[in-house]
Image (cartoon, helix red, strand yellow):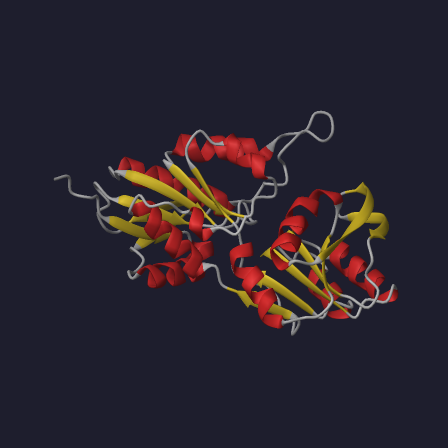
Length: 312
């Protein structure tokens, strides 16, 4: 009878807070690592325990600064060079995912480059959540487990027991996601149409759908500067909406995001902990993804189907 390879969990410095919760939910502890830092900013991760013959799960979200991504690559490389049997890159938030196509001349496709680097470094499998575009899974030449935060957010939204609920997409690109939420919650749907002249700057926005006397839930994969959702929430309140809540998986929340949220008509912003919050707002509610990742990791390790963990 073949003996199953032992499993070990490790984390990059940026995601240790989440990795500890995932490991605890799984029923184990994080392995020990160290990072040697040089005076010029160079660094070298190392494992302080043997990983030979182990299935190694390395947990790191690749939000800025890009040192987080580089540390992830170095940890994968170190595990392979230490004779790990398999290396699984657990990336709750996949940075560079917005660069999934050439949307203007002579620009990079950063998501594809990042995928190539992860596989080249030695990742045998990738586990991530709510990619900016589903087709990014095809950028990898290894299996990808794409988790959806909807399996956490939908039960939470049901628990609110809101009457006259309407699911809204912040833009045309998010209509598929909003439609899925709308289908599972059996609600109507609205779409915000926005026109951008440059990144992170909205020049015009309109709402398609009936929002008057409705409790609006705007759903998105991430919230960055919060310009879109804050403008949309204020506009919907002006058009007679009872309340506006926002559900966004990845709280990037850069620049003036916290200030905008606090001043906006948003009643509540529900996010996950794929990225640690860098500021504070009474409006923000954090729902942890640790149990979901631990459950899927357990199923992957035991060669069980993970489809039951998904709502869509």
